[in-house]
Image 1 (cartoon, rainbow, N blue to C red):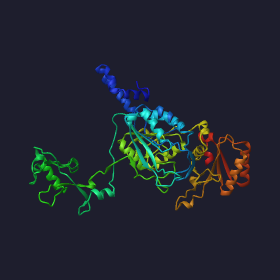
Image 2 (image 1 turned 90 degrees about the horizontal axis):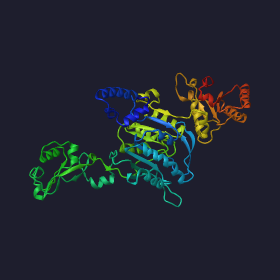
Image 3 (image 1 turned 45 degrees about the vertical axis):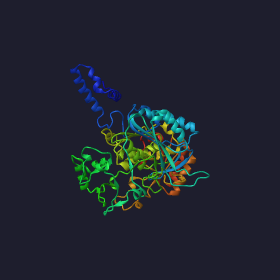
Image 4 (image 1 turned 135 degrees about the vertical axis):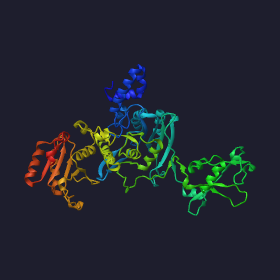
Length: 545
């Protein structure tokens, strides 16, 4: 009955227990017990029985989204490449990995054609109670809005959030552009919504909370009465004050009852409790009606509106900064995830880049799924999950509901040949256990460096003791690297006075290999030629020694 996981999912979606009720009562109990045990075994340790979470998928999100079940995700946030015709020179992470990044599309129509099938799939995998956020800038936002209205429905559009992403700046013959748009949609008639608040501004406090206690707490007066006469407890006098004579009745604010947990069976008893809590202002004028002291620090704040100017972008010196193009700040994602999901809900980012949404989801106790086409981005994400969230990238831990995994990284020569040059270079350096080049402009013939374990002293007083021991790595995405490339690398070896270096390519010509041997005879310096196949087949241990 349960031949594979797919069958389990189908049964669960149809309600496994109700499906087997068509059998006789005796058989139902047996099959239910057996089926429940089988289901529990197959889904043990899985946060969600329907879809894998805490997974980073490397590849085209259109293909990966098609593999996800319908209606399996609670919240989707995407920050896709904008149609902005910008080129980025990006320096990622602590190692300042250099990477050219283009987010250009031939035209706005081409961009929409690219996004439409992906947004259709995103709509499909979103639960009926789910929410969808699409982050975009001014280049194509209006066209994106029309497309999303067509997919989700105009009535499902909730808000356009304006995020002030940068400080004021001048712009040639036009107004300075300082904001991004975030389109917020829901799929069904009901959805998760957690009201968020912002602190009161100093101007607001000075204008409305004009009273200050001796301890410095600000407060303002609020009515304890309402219009109209009542015949019950709320219409009776309290401490000699008859509000009925004034055509009113006692009306204790609900938030006061809840906040101070007032106890009492009558309105008068509740008023006594509120006075005992120090929250009633007694007027000096005889015959005046007491008022409720509404303290500013007891109030939640101003309900969050659609203009967000209180979350600054990541500046150059921020610890969070990775150098990824258009990297979003964690507080921005915290806000979205808190508002539109609850603990253990599933958050999906299908263009997750350096993984800010995943980090935010993990830190807030949500499940998550990330997808990105860039192998380098996926590795950066994995490193960030390890370093920032303290998670382990481990298949066994992941299977029992702990840790995370990365899926579908390129592994064949054919896939690696299709990578952009910078992606291939990063793959090769990292595969050797090296660190990508730190130079921001011009690599001086060094694509990465290997710091051998033997270079680390037993008693480490400081990095300067051993960090000068390193080997250069040169990478060429060529079918056959020739002698001229080897000659150039030899010059690097001599300039840096390195005793060993590594050269990665798909293959080498006979002349290139002969020159490597001759170079060793002349100088005693070794160039280790490594092919992609040797790296993939893990046949390089003896060469790295």
